[in-house]
Length: 380
Image (spheres, rainbow, N blue to C red):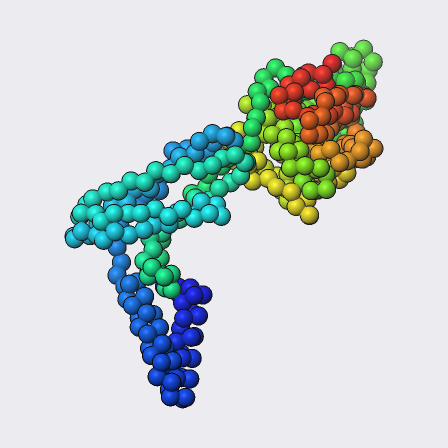
């Protein structure tokens, strides 16, 4: 049971009217106090009793894209042995609360209420818990009972298909050599003199027989692609909210494609990393991305990539329009040497631009539909 601020005010006025009325002998004031006390008592009596309901909260789909209709249903069943009185239930949806009326139900009777949730913005919307409310018409006192648990509705960012457009940038590097020398791998590099402790399996017997000295093989280390996408979440990097949405959609589109191609991936956004085991889970986490005063800016994205994913082979840094080209070059400078680096600068209504220099590619994106074209030009 909860007494509203209005209820506490009425109680205070009632007490003051009773005390002052009796002290000064003002019967009218005392009568006012007594009347207010009677109102409070009636309000309390109206909260007595509890409905015996079974309530089910069901969402048609807990994952929707921006603009798709999200529909849910609340089903209330009377489990009492007698007919229930009309009541009302409340359904929190995000920061709003919807009120639904439940008519009187016969024993075992059921009442359904359908509702729709706007999905114009990317978000994680908490729906529920459903609660029944008993109280007085004036709102002095209320008693609520929770019937369900809250449900998360994920409004995913918009994504575009990238099949084929990212094949070169996100290609599998297995079998391509690095500059690291190892004594056991697949890519033969050179021969060297045998040293005590070397694995005899790698002795090159033909050369040993020809030179009369034990010789062993050396190999160049090989590796698979490890793609890292880092998103700037400092609000100072974005001139408009639309730029952040474009940046999140860029991260989601590229990340989902990498996962589908079963390549190594890490996505750094906000205080930690996003889940990358399946595309839906990545999009779930993208739904919750927001900027923060403590978020990483574009200039430190390169250092973050190096610190958290030192084995990166392809780095994609995504930010807004505020950082300059010089800032972006500084950010890319901290990425491990030899890493293929793509910087995507999201500019509201900006024109597509791509400029490559060595392993670094700087690009400008103004429309998500241009992302496949951007990746193709980055590979040219």
